[in-house]
Each structure stands twice: as C-alpha cells, then as structure tokens.
Length: 143
Image 1 (cartoon, rainbow, N blue to C red):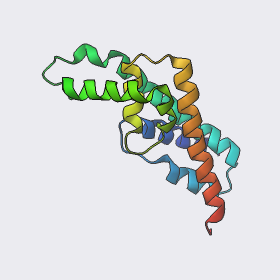
Image 2: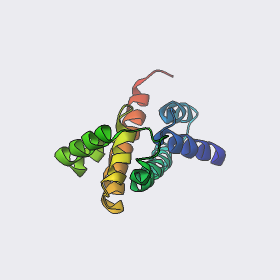
Image 3: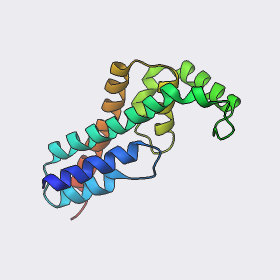
Image 4: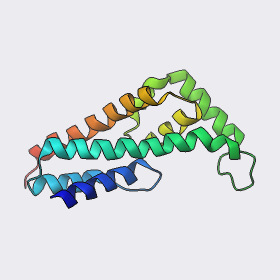
C-alpha cells in the first residue's frame, strides 16, 4: 500500500504543476481498493500543495525573463494578472484547486511575492477540501 501512497503523492504533485493530470481519479481508485480515506486525503493534499509551491517558486523568478524572445507571456497579460490578483487579494488562493486557473493563481502568487506561510495555509486548505469532497462523493457512488 506504501507504493499506492507514493503514486498518489506523485500524481497529486504533478497535477498541481502546469502538467495536465488529475489525481482525483487515482484517489477514487485507491478508495475503492480499501485505502484509508484520511491518509489518502493527507497524502494527496501534501503532494498537491507542494506541487503548487513549485509554481510559486517559478513565479518568484519568472519576471526576470520577461524580455527574452522565448518568454510566453506578454507585458499586458502579466499586468492584467497582477491587477486581478491585487483586486481579489490573497484569499483567492483558496481557489487554487480549480482545474482551470488554479495553477495560474499559484504562479501569480509567486510573482506578487505572497509570503510562503499564508500561501501554504490558503492553498493547502482549498486543496484539502477538494480531496475531502472527493472522498465524500465516493461514498455516495456505487462500487
């Protein structure tokens, strides 16, 4: 079962980066195999939150490369993202679990120099609640 937890951790970690990956599917499968729901939620939340920290670190250093030819974002996109983040504040990090835009929030948090502890608390809370919801819904679905 240890290898299952490592696989879940890895999938949750990758799902939090810019890679298209869905750890909820593996979480559901492990629940169906009799995995401990609390431990699965903790492992998935830890992996997903640490993956978001990778985005945060990338955001800290991203703007150093903004004038390179290969840089993906233009100044207008970055300015819009910063204005949006300033408007809604650090509390929007509770939505970092969203499949669309959640990864961008963690990247923007790095660009905006959000301190790590509030980042971890808000992102971890949101991501943890998502996994708790998956466990809850899995209990309602037929085997």
